Image 1 (cartoon, rainbow, N blue to C red):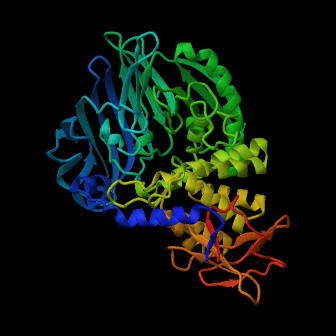
Image 2: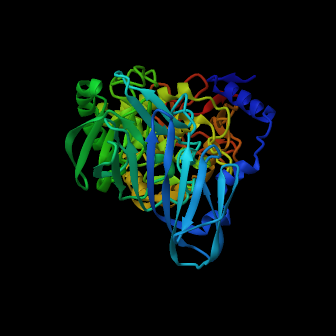
Image 3: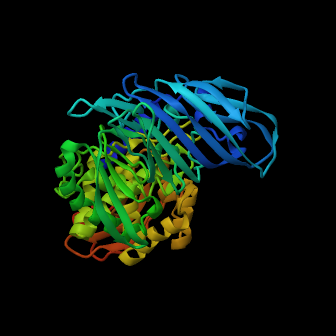
Length: 552
């Protein structure tokens, strides 16, 4: 007879059965054109963009250009860039002359008049126009949000993570090759302003009263972070934050009716957020471009150095605590979470969207570290445990490579619990854990990376093979189950039941009321050397271990 210590084992079986019944996803050539790193993409390395676009709020339309400056990584005569098919490519210009191009799905293929030699630097400009896809439920769908503020003035914002930046501007729409720097020029009607990434370099009043805003981005940036925010914005300064790399400018752009609320809410949340994040992860990654919060007509998005904010100036996640612990309603979720992406997602960027757990797991975990920095370690651990209420265990966290497909939304809360479990099992020294997180950011600063690189970093730093642990939580839907049996003679024995071969994870167990002891456990039964341990007094640290347990 088997007695279940928790209900998780049943959920593991249900999840595994559901996974077997699910039909395999069918991918199209359009998916591959969007997600695959073909030679037509890897043949050129991006150096610089100049995105120059005019916004027509009345028609919900765009017209403009993007200059691509690049270095050839090999000899080639043909390359791919991306622009959604509902937008018109008016022309592609190279050395003052038009280039022939063809289109398939949302990809555009350009043919050069003569081969471009490896190592050479060149440039071409794409001119485009049309009505971009309008996002109806941003930030969960993609496109531009067209709405109005309280006074009836246009309020427009971009939100395109996942679907891709080419939904509103031409670019090499993948994450492996971030442009080194860019200029974002946005022209808007009289009385409106644009707020984009980086530093405002110039404001120019044009003939007819329109205004052009030029924003310079000095750091590498991924495509979906490039932001357009158009509205009747008012600017106020939050002063400077005395950070690890010197003074960091804080700038806030909000609608007039939100000015008073913004001054209070931002002052209460931004400095402690920066203090916590820099402490755990190292210096803010974009000192050259500053830090901004921008009023947005959607919930929020981690746009680099211009974080979109739409949490209605309240604590929690739209006024509620996602963890259900009481700790999550003491701070503004969107400010903390979306700013955490400056380290994970913006500085460290996954090469393929299938590895988006690198962005979301670490950033969701940063919420708990923020709670720990404000209210103590026990509070942080409680917050992480509360995140489990959002986990579904429905499918793997890692998605399908090469087709622009993310994995399960469990990448947020399940990924956070995985990181906390690794801390608990392998790095009980808090100073050492902080050192590891800071080292990860330092080693991969402003780089695009893979799951294998992240796991390899922890393996190398800890001198142990954690690959099966990461794989179990990232590549399988179900949880590992700690099975404990009590033979008539001898000590209790334990093993892991797991989908990942060679899964091994030391686990904390104790007799009720005693001190936890860390026991090595693999996939074959081995003794639990805890004195006086019995079926009726066994306690497993399921507060910090997200696992199933059963007694046999």
